[in-house]
Length: 92
Image (cartoon, rainbow, N blue to C red):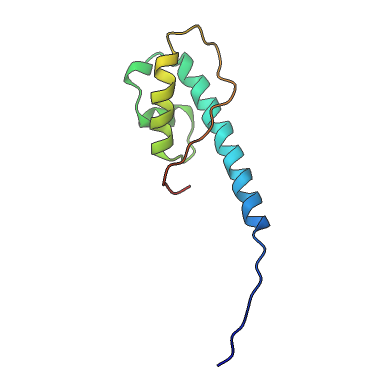
């Protein structure tokens, strides 16, 4: 039986992941800034993201963003410049 060897370039895949990560970071930063002006932040849940955007977004990331932003609400913080997306063993 013959063995066939394939050489695959992974650069395209990596570039797509970088593009996707940047887009999700932009969405997450916008959501974080929206949460800072959201009146019901104390009771915010993952369903609150639907008030911000109709786009599908991982609930784990939304919940983590809410946990991070809640303590920052009391500080005189007008905007968050960048809120990085943190994936922990979840599907992107």
